[in-house]
Image (cartoon, rainbow, N blue to C red; front, top):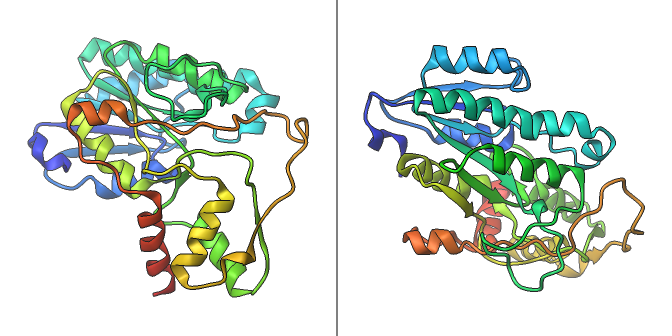
Length: 288
């Protein structure tokens, strides 16, 4: 469902508009509505005065906050910056949005979970983030306020820039082995499939937590093999990479962080397609 259904009086503001999800949201927002897209140059979301001034000037009906610091290990090394971007900034947006009755859509992450489950997490599952990135994003979920839409997603794949599909295809075309991790499992999510869900949630002002990912739980190793299958290459070119030592990177990652889109099902939203279908489409587009 596109933004045109909202009518010409609606103004939508997207922060973090230069990121892979932000770009896709901007690209797919078509119709007579007013869209204001702001990257980090256009708006420093960590500056409370600047956030308040921008929102009061733009007077949006909806704010979709895609601004994030996605360097998980960088967050671990600089928690103050992580919490400033993922928590304080959300609080600033919530404060001023509340004043003008704007609806906030906050994008969050599967990293709020510790990965000790063996079945996909539903929205009401308890959280226990293992790293600063997840901790700061969890804080942002709370600070977005009870009326905000908080969309948790995972393993984003871009629509307009090289992603994991392209990385695998490059290795396959060079007839090289492509080593990918097999020890973590989650749900790859293609932004082209996520963006329309976010726009509908924003239009309907759905309050609370919503999980939104492509269908299917996989590892990057299995994901790579699905790329090989889609392009007709030998899937045995994809090999599992050596298991990392627990302390080999600053931030711990959850071993299992698949999300169950249970709220979307209750709301009657169409099922988001399986990641393998999205992989096949991306491969077909890449190889022409």
